[in-house]
Amino acid sequence: MTNSLKPQTFMLVHGAWHGAWCWAHVADILRAHGHRVFTPTQTGLGAKRHLMSRDITLDVFVQDIANELEFEDLSDVVLVGHSFGGIAISGVADRLPQRLRQLIYLDSLLLPGGMTAFSQLSPEVVAARTAAAQAFDGGMSLPPPPPEAFGLLDPAHQAVIAKRLTPHPFGCYTSPLHLQHELANGLPRTYVVCTDPIYPALAKSRELAQSLGWPMVELATGHDAMVSAPQATAELFMHLAVQTRPVTP
Image 1 (spheres, rainbow, N blue to C red):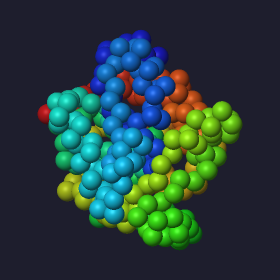
Image 2 (cartoon, rainbow, N blue to C red):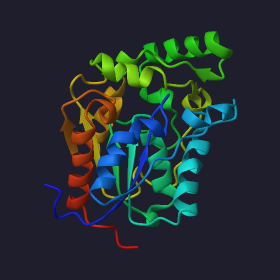
Image 3 (tube, rainbow, N blue to C red):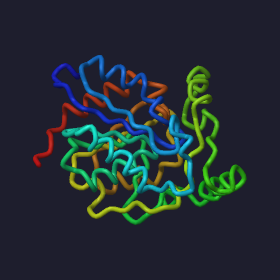
């Protein structure tokens, strides 16, 4: 399925409570096939948890990835966003479409311009997360949920992330995504639905992708596909990359 794919550049953006670490196995597989892979960590998370601040907004998350593209001088990039990372890649596509080949939304939040992450979640989820953040540190960050919340059924997989999850900047849930163009900015895009088990919090995002007529594919694993099924996840990325022609500047 992937034999005809010439070397590509992938940038993999993690979701809430995660960091670059979650992509380790997927990145190894892609590199073994000759691809370049970048896995930036968003401000305040993972190895950058010491930068946690009330000032971290969606604009900061978008700038994190935009800076990575610009300072590494990357082009023709397959930009992947997992879960909350889908918001950041939408913002980057709005700003730097000329550096991108395509977008892959891996079980991601889809956020129209001017909206906040909370606008795509149910009122019950919003209330629960707001209360949790207030109780944790006065509302600066949201503590991570238990590993099984990410659709990880194997205790070994749960153990992998349990010791690495870090609090998520709360301002990224309450700040709007600023877009100057339509969502995905005309770039080729695919929405990947993780189906086993399905992630309830993404119901509105799945509905939005469907209503926009985006290509949608299924991956038979849980929400943290890069942990529970790294081989299948990497193969899907390569398959999608070979199916899509680069965008003409």
